[in-house]
Length: 171
Image (tube, rainbow, N blue to C red):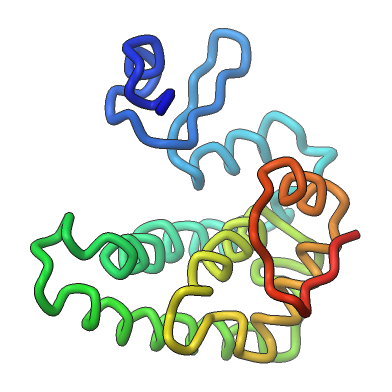
């Protein structure tokens, strides 16, 4: 994979994805890239005026949900044994919390789609492999569908050839 190449490792020594190159700027880590893009392109409205909830949800999803999902998806990296089962149980609770947090709102951190919603879309898709998939929760499914209907998200899914459930409709 390209991540193993010396040229990629020069940009991102850990050799993980994603890595964004914007001129002389190199940004790694999904949440950091989303925050960089929100600052660089304010017209894209990736951040609400008050960023408190955006920061809260991006850090929660990056530090808590994503690391839990990595333990679930790759238990052998974390010692094997019961790691995957324990992570699956934890992930269920975390997705339940996200489901509850979407009560009465369309978007996670503001009145419009923000970077937090794009991260949640990614985490919900990762959660498709759980015994009770993340998107089986009604609010998370509706959020996933709303986010998928955004032209840029729909284009990215198509370009990446990502698998989606039968019920998902792209823009």
